[in-house]
Length: 206
Image 1 (spheres, rainbow, N blue to C red):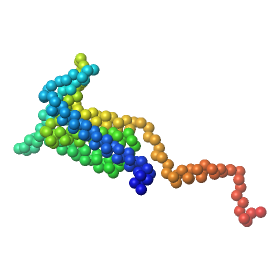
Image 2 (image 1 turned 90 degrees about the vertical axis):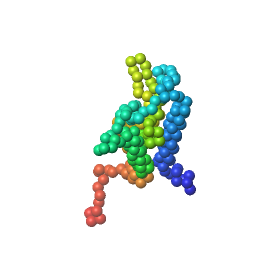
Image 3 (image 1 turned 135 degrees about the horizontal axis):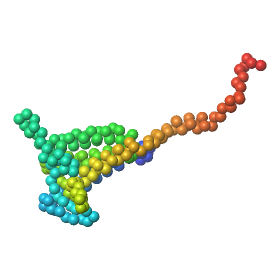
Image 4 (image 1 turned 180 degrees about the vertical axis):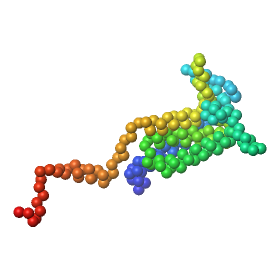
């Protein structure tokens, strides 16, 4: 039965949960951008407190405003940097999705979560670049002598996800759980005690 199948395969349940998490994060990113775009004029700033504010900007570069106004000359043509970044985001998202579908059941929870966040952020900003020609950014943090670039939920997913993947490589690895056969063999050898003083008599000896 399906319930028995999922109960015997917790890795499959974990993989499905993270795919659902990715869908929720992508939807939240797009909904928040749609709300900001419809509620604020370009450049409008709404203070939230503690240095945070909502500031609607249109970013035609990479995350946190890097590579803004990028263009790539190719012979007599000039390729739009926003389109190239959108195609790059699509390629990254495709590779991550295939990797998660194929290897997700073998990944520990921490790197699986990290890659899911990176995938969600790549898809969220890809949709903006290919649909709008720019990325909607609106989360702004600034205090005296410090002004962080405006970003969005997708950027946060990418940064947090990358940090989790790096953290999973730094933390000590836990040994893989034993299979049922390995546990049976371990119990067998644990119960067997060898006496070094024991002599093995052959049938031919007196």
